Every structure is written in C-alpha cells, then in structure tokens.
Image 1: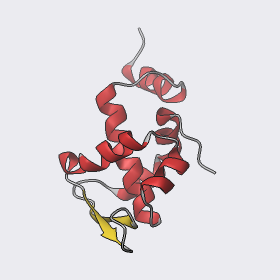
Image 2 (image 1 turned 30 degrees about the vertical axis):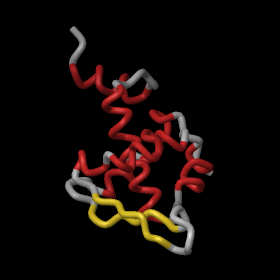
Image 3 (image 1 turned 60 degrees about the vertical axis):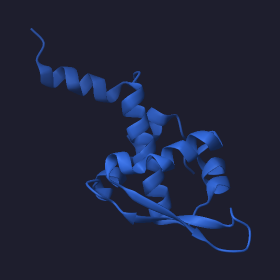
Length: 113
C-alpha cells in the first residue's frame, strides 16, 4: 500500500498539469515577486515572462483577490509611462516565493535568466 508521503514526493519531482485556479495564483505571486525586486512596467513584464500583455493586465487587476495591493506609479507625461509598485503583500509570504521560485517558473513554463 502506497503512503501519501511517497505520493506527494513523486508529485513534487515530476511536472504535471495544474488547475487553472492554481496557475492563476502562481502567476499572481510570481508577478508580485518580480515587481517587488525591480521596477517593471507592462512591456518589461511581458518581455521577461513571455506572458501575453492582456494576461498580465488581468492578473495585476485581480491582485486584490488574494489580498495583495499593487499600484501603478506614473513616471512621465504619457499615461502608460511608469512602473508597478507592490504596496502590500497581504497574506503572502515573499520568502516562500523565493524558496519555491524554480517550481513556480516550471509550473508557469517560464525561464528566468
């Protein structure tokens, strides 16, 4: 009889499909991580993650769903000149993201340099 511990170990070592909700959550915390560590705008997030711009916009707009506050800081005359700033992590532990960054990137099919 297989124990639940060996099952979870095999699940952690082999990539597998994840639910849409889980992927959306991982996308949110990954973008939080990026925005926290460097000033990013929509274009730089798109170039770094290869996520569609609309997906990034929708994800950032839905951050309050998980208690995270992000704002856009205007930096220039054009309405889209500026960068995103993480105001409040809410219930998210940023250290957990750092610890699991490789797994998150694998799940989202994102390569970081």
